[in-house]
Image (tube, rainbow, N blue to C red; front, side, top):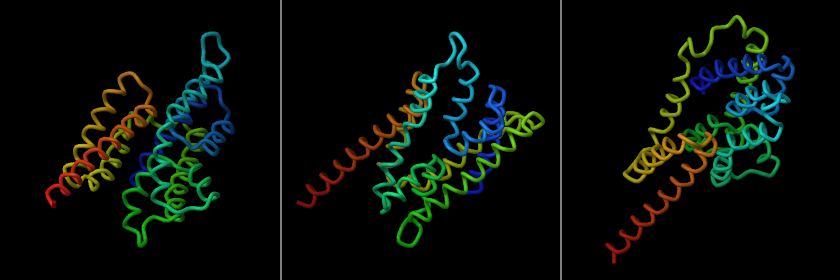
Length: 228
C-alpha cells in the first residue's frame, strides 16, 4: 500500500488547500474527508463551493449530481466485490463506506494471493490504511497548506497512474484479458473527451466486462466444438 499512500498525500493536501480557498473552515474541510472520503468528488465539490449561492454559480443539487457522477464507478466496484467476498450486511455497509479505487485494486489483485482468498479483514485493512493517510494529509493541508509546495511542482501526479499500472499488468494473462484491457482503455480515452470521469469508468467498465464475457463465451464454444 505504501506507493498508494505516497500518491494520496499530495492529493489530499491539494484538496484541503482548494477547500480552504473556497471558503470552508478547517473543521468543514476535515469533516468532508472524514465522512465523504472520495478524493475526486471532494476536490470537485470544494471547487464548486466557491460559487455556491452566487448568481450563475453552482447550486446544491449541481454539487450533489457532480459528486454522484464522479463516484458512479463504485457501483461496479461494489458488484465485483460482492462476488469475491462473503460478508454480513453490517460488513458490507462498512466496506462500502470506506471503498476507494486504490483499496479495490489492491483487494482484487493482491487479495487473491491470501490463503482462502480476500477476507473482510483484508478489505478493511486496505481501506482504513488509506482513510488514515487521507485524513492526516487533509489536516496537514488545511492547517499548513499555504506554506507547502504545490503537488504539480513536485511532479507527484504520476504516482497514482504508475501504481495502478503495477496492479494491472499482472492481470494481463492471455489474449482475451489483453484485448479487453486495450479496448476498455481506448473507450475510456474516447469517452473522457465529453463525459465526467465517474461515468467514463462506469461505461467503459461495463463495456469491457461484456466484451470479455462475449470473447470467453466464443472461446468456450469453439473448444466444445473441437472436442465434439
